[in-house]
Length: 368
Image (cartoon, rainbow, N blue to C red; front, top):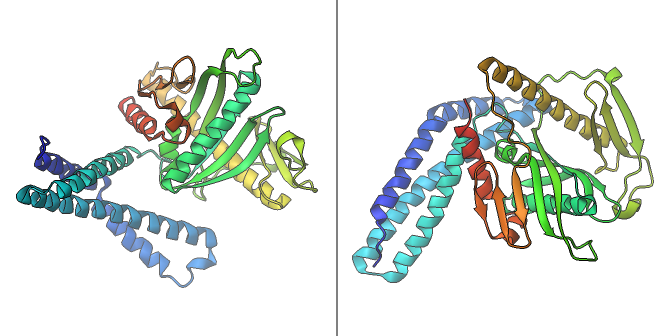
């Protein structure tokens, strides 16, 4: 009925899942779940709301991870039975159903294998994604907005929460910058490989002579801080400005000075937030973003010191990491991994998992 070796494929999936269970240390995860359940059962837990949120969030994440793998193990067992039934009865319809399920399982297990590579200190955190237009004028601003849509669609495809914290529109078209929080298990570890300069080549829709233009946008990804990070910020090191939130073309969307911009003077890091109606809420959100950026700065400095001690001479792969060509041909290519596709429309609509997985594997192979 088919020239595929189904028993071999199914056994390979079963072995992969067994390896994943060992790498993730299921026994340790189950012990941690038991400990967290005991904490969650404490009637005084919610006296400290931040700690309660941490406990319940981590408990839910660990339970979901175990449930996810157990479901995949069950599905592998089911597809084995389905293939045996189809081949035993020479049933082409049932075999087609089994093939579809087997291919879906391969994809799901591959995604789970990527998860096992995300074992960095902050990889399990939510992510703060910043997109900025760079060289290229109005085309760059438009390109930054296209990237924002790409990541928004990627999050939607995976059911991840994608909250825009700040959005600065350009005068003619597109955006100057955007900051978004992506809330999902391992959001930072997953998206961290997207950091760098993204280059677009296309016929400019803003050029009356329809010439080909190259434009650039930068993507920055940092982990969201939590209460264990101890990022100390001296109020004397801050300059805080308030202003009116605005929409495209400078149109006011708020009649009060509720938007907040915070400048950290020692590092010259500037963050702003205007998604809330309250100045107090915007200030709190902006401070959280600043803490995340300072945490990432500390992480980068620590990594640089380690690399210096190791004699690491490899250059940063962060700049010019991916090229998107829309004219004269269609191609998206990652310059670090060489992963590429000609389906540019799908990529710009959020289908970037192949690039992310290749990036995670590339990073792991280049560590240490």
